[in-house]
Image (cartoon, rainbow, N blue to C red; front, side, top):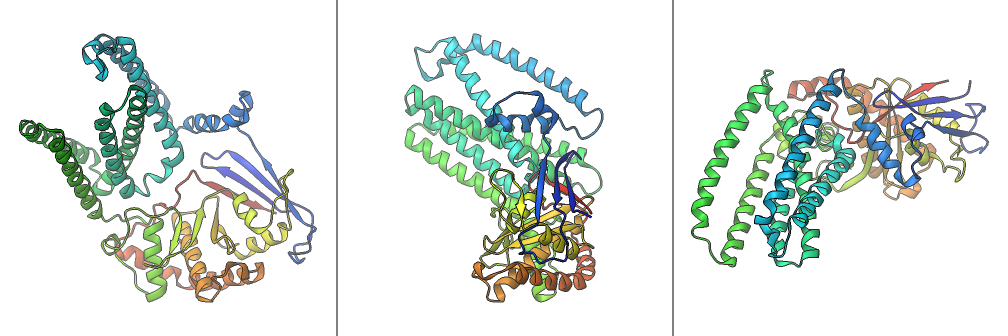
Length: 460
């Protein structure tokens, strides 16, 4: 029976089918007479719109925005959006009347110029919000600590650009103010999403609403205190040098306090970096670190997808939940015109047999130092953690075996390494899961995927 693998996106839509040629599964993988053909399914929305090829990202964003989480979500959001747009239109109309008094930093400015500048700033900011949410929306929750501090950096950088803008001519000033609007938009996306994740982390007894209400009250009190302190400070600041000195000092205090606040948080979910620390310690010493111990070791900013053994330099990078074609491309090259992958079916069948009892497929591309993890349909959070731990264990053993020169790895040697690593990890996995729960880790929440993931179903 021919190999057939179906791939679906997070909404359950069929995105691709991989069909193998009719060859014997017992043949050697290097005979060169087997291949995998890929059938890509295009969403109906893209077939209805005759847009040019370079606009496919617009179709993808619109399609992803159309995927609603539950019934009743769309009517509620539609009402909110119409109300928000009406309020925005009212604001624009009032700005057109008020802008002559503002002047926009230029005595010759007129209401139309001021209004257009305001529209340009807000438009660039909202476009940046859409693109940023599409590109990094999935990673905001797993990496909430990083993005919470990044939000403050974006906001402070926008404030600096605003302060620098009066010193520039009109053209560069417009560009600078637009960049400031983009940074504030990024701040809004990252701050809102990361705050939601952190609030859910601190709400232990289902009191998320109460926690948010108290947090808003605290922010109101702190804002009032800041306004009073600022009013006193302004009376003593007169020269530009004093103004910039106070600004730099206050921004430094702001970032330092936010960094200290983020460092004080001990998350109980395992994202990529925390999984590296926990699993490398367990596989190396047989101990499981607590969330507090891991928070003292983890970096706030870490490279996405990096595999790091404790505090060593990066071993490799890993992709989890990516389309299966990424894994296949590391097994054999694809045809330039047809996209078919020669010499791949027999190799793929051996991988499928190796991971027949697992909820994932895995391959380590030693020459490129990239690990590929394809998740099967229904893959649980514990299976995703096992896949990540296995990839970390494989890359560490590959380096310890003296195979740091990636070109020395062949398909057979890499497959043998994966087989022995899987057997070793599986023998200790039940104990690892139990000790993770005892240490306080929430292993039922998946926090490893940082993109909209894909799932595969193997048939044949």
